[in-house]
Amino acid sequence: MDTNSILLNSKLKILSYKGLIDIFSIDKFERINTLVIKANNLLLIDIFRVIEIIKKSKFNPSIFICLTTKIEPSNRFLDNFIKKYPNLKINVLSYEDHKKIINKELNSISKLLDNKNIQKNIVEELIFIFKKFYLSEESSFMTETKTKYAKDREKDLGIIVQARMSSSRLPGKAMLEIAGEPVILKILKRISKEFGLEKTVFSTSTNPKDDILYEFVKSNGFKVYRGEENNIADRFLEAALDNNFKYILRVTGDDLFRDLEMIKNIFNIMKKMNYDYIYSDDLMLGCNSEIMKIDTLKFIREFAKFRQETHALSFFLDRSDIFYVKRFLTGNKNKPLISLALDELGDYISIRRFWEKNESFCEGNWEYTKLLDLINKNIKNFNHHPLDVGLLNRDSKLQSFSFEY
Image 1 (cartoon, helix red, strand yellow):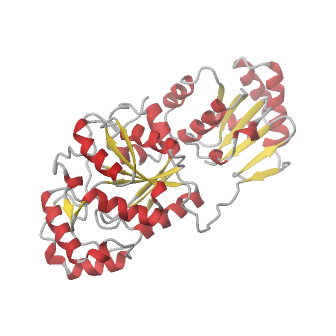
Image 2: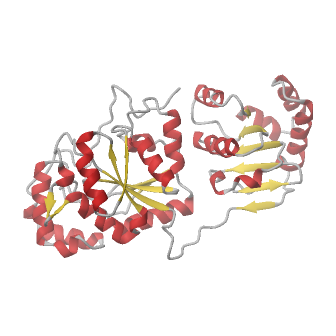
């Protein structure tokens, strides 16, 4: 059975699912009595996507999730996850139940369904489904539409640049000047030149200290979205929804040296393989990037344990038990022990010196290898070598990046 296909007949649809539900529109699910989801390597984001589509639709089928492998998250999480949606008729057939279906022990399945207090006509329909489609190759297919790689391949991608004035290590760094312009303007200009002004949004908080950022960025013609200071996930989600973004590239206000071509490469991989979250991890600090699907932010808003504390967003996203995650490695082994991220005063002095000496290069869409060559030739400019290059520590005390259950 093709794991990326929907099997059809006149009364029902069976979805053999591997992370592709979000590409199908709601109207394809009209007039369904029963929706059976055969889930290979099920993640919680899979169930969440199905529920989100059904919630938006006008129908309310009986939903049966058939686990073909032992589920990664705990049963307690899954049970509580489903209880969160009491108006939906969701049932889970366990891995052990699935084995009974495969072994054609349909009498046992019938008894199991009876014990779940499921209506008799639905039980009969399910048995019919298992016999005719689930256990045989008899099917017709509706397959995924392949991604088109045209000139507008980034049309679904929005870029959200985030910054605030109250940085703990270097307050006000977004407005520090390099070559006659504030850092935040340098970043926004470079990003928007490559991806488009209409796809570039600046995000900051509603803290009055950030009024200066809001006014300055807006006066330079960029879209601005404001939200709660520490709730990054919600702020990003609302900005994405307002602008119809399906994918979000997150750029922090201290990253002047994002590798733009690498962003395009990982986005192509993300769309082709249908990842929820992809990040690069072996370039110099300040050059790596991460892209997320909007669905991941919806999930975080719904299930984060501390919903108002999502400022460490990457830690929420890098959860392979919940999302389809890809760590992208370029294979680059030349990684000078310097930081191109503007975190401390020493970074600012080094970066400003380097930028102003190589301004036309830094403002363009350079190749990473050429940046490395230029860094090595100007290595004396970088006399600040932070001890924590490439190291990130999670908040183990508060577990602020964890989820409910």
